[in-house]
Image (cartoon, rainbow, N blue to C red; front, side, top):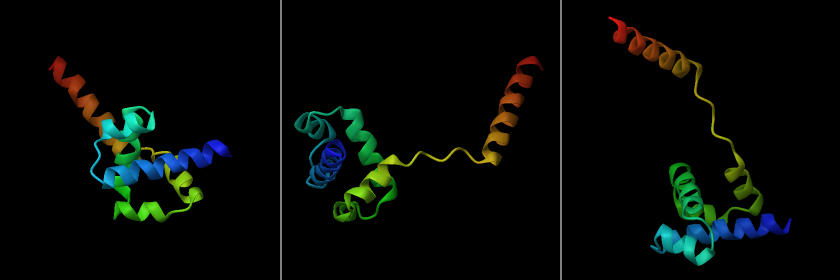
Length: 95
């Protein structure tokens, strides 16, 4: 449980520092975490939460749920289109 609370504190801090104009690299150095971790969290929040400052009022449980969601798998129609396009590329090489 302690790790969960600490992680949620760090996520809130990432958002706070970003809203204050701190760069991702500076946030990572200041919190002692990887720059890509900061990028991942910020990109997720920026893409899905408007306004970003709203996430600061979320409970730890809500933050945990948000960051724990796995990305959706591509829709079936996208998979079919990908297979179709790939097959066309292969056929063009031989024609």
